[in-house]
Picture 1: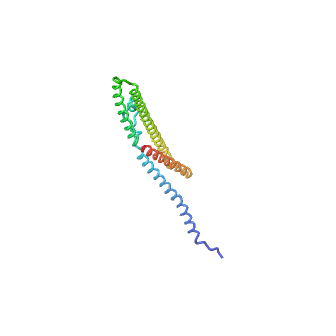
Picture 2: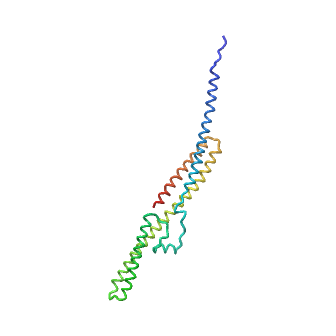
Length: 204
């Protein structure tokens, strides 16, 4: 008796063929989604390049700094620092007026030592206040320097991300695609952390 042909074998082969075709299609779609996400991230990252205080900072000469220490508000200070500097400047102005008045008293005073000691005391307070202004200035300078460093780093990372995106698109090796995509999103996280730090620094 002749062997009976298996009528299902053709159907099974067609199913297997469909399964084999479907897997690459799914992978291709997934890769396209990742590529599109990369493009969106890079576009958003370019928009988020902060226009912060660091971008408007200038280098101050010795004369500029001397004027600042003496009471000229020449820096882009933040919030409470501005108020504190103004308070110290106003106190220094008041003390300086008192010193000028007492220096006139010394001429006609029978016991100038007391007045001179008073003048010296006020000068010490002015020096202390000026030192605090200097400290605020230096902290602000460090803040701006850090913002610049973070912004420069972000620009560098963005360039690396664009390069990584290009490698992801050009390679056909799935393992390499996975590697490049992973590195891309790690760099994205670093940019986000840097932007958070810049945001906090701009609040100070």
